Image (cartoon, rainbow, N blue to C red; front, side, top):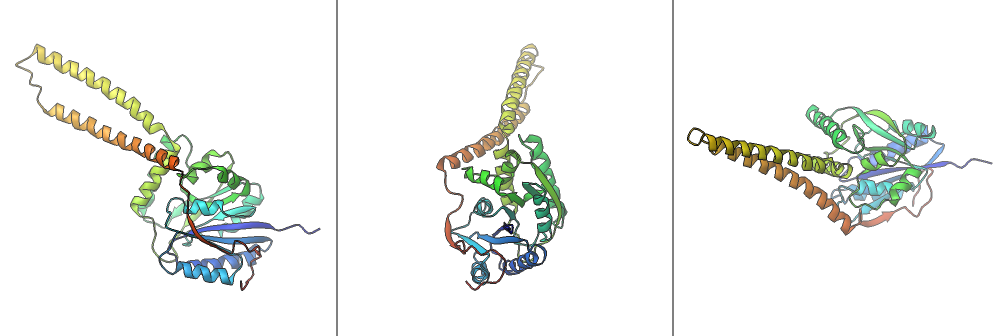
Length: 325
């Protein structure tokens, strides 16, 4: 009896990638046909409401290749679109890669090999990057601080690309969290993590959609989902500062009473103290506000993504040959 082929899905988020999606699809098909013919596969794009020619190109690809599938979002969902596409995938495992060629495609056979050896989660981690050294340094500082103040370990230089077994994705599908952090789910769901280093290369075409504020927003989401240390630190630090302020106040009062004419207290210490305490209060109120915002979003329980259209999800052909659907 012939053994049934395993099915591998590729989940690829995209936004304004008209210069990459066609070439990426053709290269993936060539890769599976030449190196991985023993597997069935789907190539699933989730388009985050592109405004260029990406959508038209994806429709052409779906018409040309039956194994290409597309989810079109009704609008842009920058924080959750990639994760939503991942949990909508089918197959024995799913590989998540970006659409900009910054993750080399030769990592796909390597991830599958580790999966066949028993790994449930294979995370691609950057061993080096072609991005600016300043940005690389900022990322390393973020990972170091995250691991220092987080309740769970954050995988260094991991951006979400990797291979995920169906058992792990079934767990993800049971998590109903509109403020989801995929990195934190990986760290807390119990499966052993296998890492695979790679060199993060430059984009194939177009410009990066990640600007400084989006990276800061992502860092805040990861931190508030993974740690309560900040709030605890605020409580302890506030108590310590209050104690010292009381001691300093008593000392100033005693010195002023003993040396009334010789000890001018002045306004400088008062102003410094007020501004110092005020800045700390603003910082910790902002931190508390981030947690309140996350709680509010969870209470509203909005969907991760609102879909506009799906294409080729009702077609079961995943063998990798051309099909005029």
